[in-house]
Length: 140
Image (cartoon, rainbow, N blue to C red; front, side, top):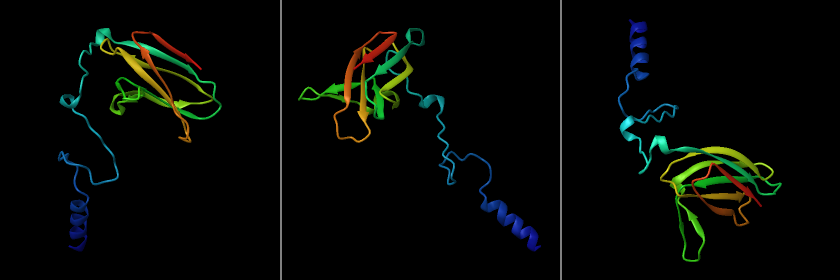
């Protein structure tokens, strides 16, 4: 009897296996997205999307970080400010070099390429690139 009570307690305290739709209390970090939660950008047409190659060389021996954004604004002082929710690609520039690829859509007129130094004490490199282009090459 003690064994069956212990086994029953162990089974009920583990939580069972069904998906209740709520958040998981365990250590797992499952982020499931259903089809109706997918947001498709306005103007997106799979037939009019195309790959864009990035070839960046900034001539720095320091570690830098790269972000490419699809949306940005111009501040009153003329500075370009990225809409961080529109990040398309991110990565590290090692010895000032980055090669990568992303898919652009026909609705994307330009992108903001931003590379910043790890120490954060210097202004980042920023350049707006007009699209469509199959290859973005930046040499500095």
